[in-house]
Image (cartoon, rainbow, N blue to C red; front, side, top):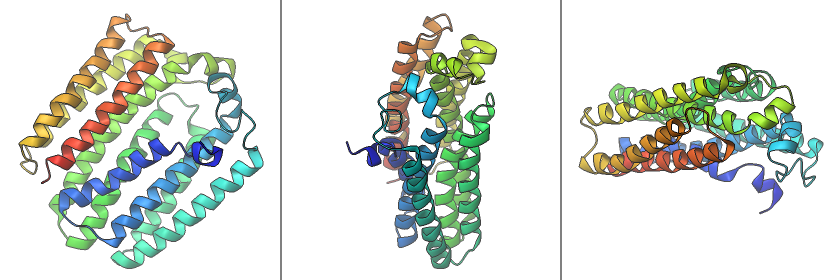
Length: 287
């Protein structure tokens, strides 16, 4: 894969971009602002990943030496320029969307998001749990962005409230995933003096919090169905996601709450698949 594409982590960026379209499907509204917002989120998520790799180059040299920067395929200078270009394009797109939906607050939200994404990599990532919450919150915010476009287009506050709920649910799941990623990266983080939650408070505490968050996520799935906006297909596909969430929690518990790096890698993989099924459940249940 081309290093300039790889550094974007296109799978993760695409997953975030798709979440914007979730609300287009739920609200049955497909328009140019949604298409542009999907592209915007993909580019901004990619820019965030590039900036993150810039600040994490020493840690990645230990944990992920094959990434473009530590492997020498992209220099730090070029990575910074690349991120700047991606941010600029994203902000310009947000201006167009603000014009199309006749709401300047969309542009303001994107500017604030860009600042938060940069500040996360520069300052907050090393702060235990705070960084995890920011990442989870930004991912959940992608769904809320879609809900905001719907609100400006349809003036339907009920659909916007649904986007807030789904966004919160997504944030909870991603905080759990970020905690597991921190447990996976303990070796490299310790070598570089990072102060992640697992390093300061141990894997056991991190595992307990993750299991609780996964339980909340499964419960949230069920509550969302009771809103009456999704059909039975949602519930059927949700069962698959629930099994994976439960298995992930079991894998952490089976390791006596002290998961090895390989166990964390496996849990992250299952959580990604489970999240994909969660999105599929919402999409299928909307028709």
